[in-house]
Amino acid sequence: MHGGTDRESNRRRRDIRQLKTAKGGIRVLIKKSADIRSNEITPKEVYLNRRRFMAAAGTAGAALVAGKYLRNLITPELLAQAGTRLEYTRSDLSTQGEKLTPLDDITTYNNFYEFGTDKEDPSRNAGGLKTAPWTITIEGLVKRRASFDVDSIVKMHPSLEERIYRLRCVEAWSMVIPWVGIPLSSVIKTVEPASKARFVAFETLYDPKQMPGQRRSVLQWPYVEGLRMDEAMHPLTILAVGLYGESLPNQDGAPIRLVVPWKYGFKSIKSIVKIKFVEKQPPTTWNIMAPQEYGFYSNVNPEVDHPRWSQAKERRIGEFFKRSTLMFNGYGDQVAGLYAGMDLRKNF
Amino acid sequence: MTKKSVLLLKCLVWVGCLAPLGRLIFRALTGRLTANPIEFITLSTGTWTLIFLIVTLSITPLRQVTGLAWLIKFRRLIGLFAFFYGCLHFTTYIWLDKFFDLPDMVKDVARRPFITAGFLAFLLLIPLAATSTAGAIRRLGGSRWQLLHRIVYLSALLAVIHFWWKVKADTRQPRIYASLLAVLLLYRVAAWLLRRRSRLVPERTAPAADAGPGRHLET
Image (cartoon, chains in turn cyan, yellow):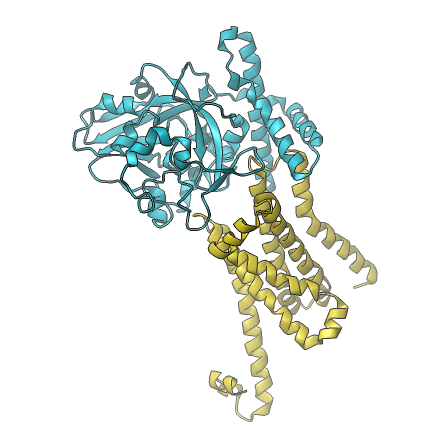
C-alpha cells in the first residue's frame, strides 16, 4: 500500500515535530516568565494522551513512551526546522474549558488534498510550498481591488489574536486548536465591499508544482469556498496565520487560511490567494464534487446526517470514547441567529 | 517440491500473513498509529482483508497459468488469513469504534449502504471459514463444497464496494482492487467458457466455431 521510504520520511517528520515543541519549551524558559503560555507546556500531553488511549484499548503504554523518547534521541539533527514565533493578544472569543489537541496531532493529521489524500500526506508533502512572498488578490464588488502582501492583510487589524476553537471535521473527528489570526471582518471593512456584495468567495493557490496533490483530479482545482456576507463578518470568523503561538505549518494552510468554527472543517479554506466579493452564492469545491453530501452552508449539525454516516457523534482526537456533536459545534449562542427561519435540513 | 521446501515455504507464508498484524502491533507500541489510532487500525485491517481475499482468488489462476501445482497448498491458509483480518476489522468496528453500542450498529448496518456491504461481505466469509477443514470437505462432498465456496466471489465483490462507497473523493485505491478483482473474475468466466466449448466439441461433428452462445444455453 505504502512505500517504506514514505513511512520512513514520515517518521522523521514526526520526530521533527516533537523536537520542535521540546525546543519551544526550552526557549520559553529563557524568556521572561510573562511570556509563558499554558499551551506551550501542553505538548507533553501527546504522550499522556496516547498512553490513556492505549490503556483503554488494553495495550501497555510504557513501551510507547519509551519508544517516543528513543526516537527523539536518535534524530537530534532535525532540530533545525521551527515556525516563527508570533506576538499576539488573547481574545475573549476563545473557547473556554477545552483541552488543547497536541501540536503533533494538529500537524500530522490533516485533510489538505492539495498535498495528498492520506491524513499524513500533507505533513510529508507540504514542505515544498513557498509561503513568502505571498500575495492575496482582493477583487469583485469592492472598492479597494488590489493585490496585497499577506503581511499588509494582517495589519488591517491592530494585533494578532489567539482564538482557541473547536474544529469539527465532516468525517466525525474533532480537535481543539489555538489559532492565531485576525477577524475576517477587519479585512472586509478595510477593503470596503459594495452594498451589492452579498457573498465572499475564497480560492486556494493552484500550483501543481508546489502542490503535488493537484496533479491528480481528485477534486476540481483550485479549491474554492464561500461564505454569506453576514457569516464572513461574524466576529468568530477569522483569517488564521498561526497556531500554538507560531506561524502556520504548511500542512495546516500556511501562510493564511480561513477558520469558521461552527462549520465543518472543509469550509475553512487553506493557503488563500484570492478573496472575491460577489452578488450570487459562489460555487464551493465539495459541493461541486458531491452536492447531495456537502451543502453550501455545511454548519455542524448533529441532527442532519451525512448520507453515508451519522453526524450525531464525533471522536475528539486523543480520546477513546466518542462524544456527542454539538449544534453549530457548540457556537449556537453566537451564530444561531444567522440562520433564524431557515430550514437547516434543506440548507445543510 | 520436497517436503522440506514445502515446510519452509509454509513458514514463510505464515510470516508474510502475520506481518501486517506485526506492523500494527509495532506501531501501537511505538505510538505510530497516527492521531486517530482507531481510524488507522480500521483502515489497515480492512485493507489487508481485501488484499488477502484478492491473493486467495489469484491462486487458482496463477496455478493454471504457471503450472505450479503446489500453489494450491496455500489457498486455504491465505483464505483463512483473509477471514482473520476480516475478524480483526469487524472487531475494531464493534469494539473500538462503536464500543458495543448495539442500537447504533444496527442503525449503521440498516441505513449506511457502505456498512451494509461490508457487513454482508464479512457474514459470507463465516460459512467458508467454518467449512475449510478436510472433514468438512468430505462431509459436504467435493462438488457441493466447491459450489458453496464460490460465495467468496460475492464476498470479495461486496468488500470492494464497501471500500469504494466509504471513500470521500479519492477512489484510486478502491479502483485498484476493483480492477484486480475484475481481472480475476473475468479469467474464471473465460476459463469456464473455454471448458464448455472443449466439452462440446467432441460431441459434435461440426467445427468448434459452430458452438455459439445459443447452443450453450441448451446444455
